[in-house]
Structures are given as structure tokens and as C-alpha cells.
Length: 131
Image (cartoon, rainbow, N blue to C red; front, side):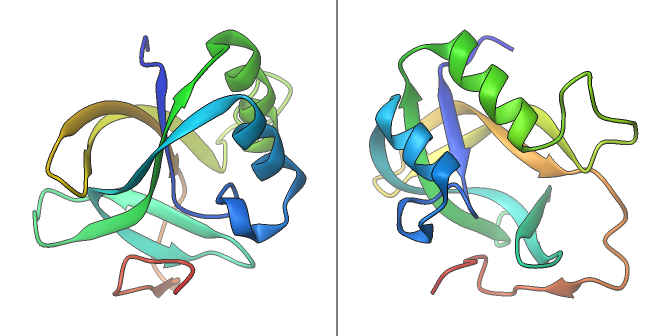
């Protein structure tokens, strides 16, 4: 994965008060609001997103341009539990997807997608974890 862009939709958003959100904002530039085609679920106190081929299903969040890709993704992989120190199956998986800025600009971004079964989880139909 060579993208220098990251799409976030949950606890990494700025207003969450999360230390990792502060870390991300200190090491990136926010390009603005966006979405990708997917479905959003409430896993616990945090959300999980999965991809969808249905273009009417959207997960909303923000797109960031990462300044130091290796450092930032090493820290975020650990935060998201996708690092080599975590047992499989990982809770999240890192994938490159096409996300869209509000003006329609398509950007290849990394997103941490939920990697476990979604049956039984509450679907967030709006696609927004924070309203």
C-alpha cells in the first residue's frame, strides 16, 4: 500500500478528545470531509466500517494527507490492533479504497476496515458515527 492518504470515520476524528486523534492531526493535513462506499456499524464505544458495492451506502468521515507515512502508520497500526504483536484475526484490517471529497474528487486512501463478522451489530444507517 503506497497511499499517503488516510480516511478516518471514528475515534481518530479531531473532536473525540482521543490522544491518537491528536497524534494524527499533528502529523497530517486534513483535506476535508469525505466518504467511501460502505456500511458503518456500532461495534462498542467505537465504530467499524465494511465496504459496499452499493453506491448509495456511504461511510462519512475525513480525509488526511499523511506527512511521515512510515511513522504514522506504524503508530496507527498498533492503535487499530493490526500490528504483528496482535493475534489474528485482527479486529481491523488496513486497505486501500477510493474515497471522495465533498466536491467529488476521488482519492486513493488507506482506511481501517472492520475485519470481523457484523451479524448482530447495530448498523448506523446515516454512515456517520458522530452526528
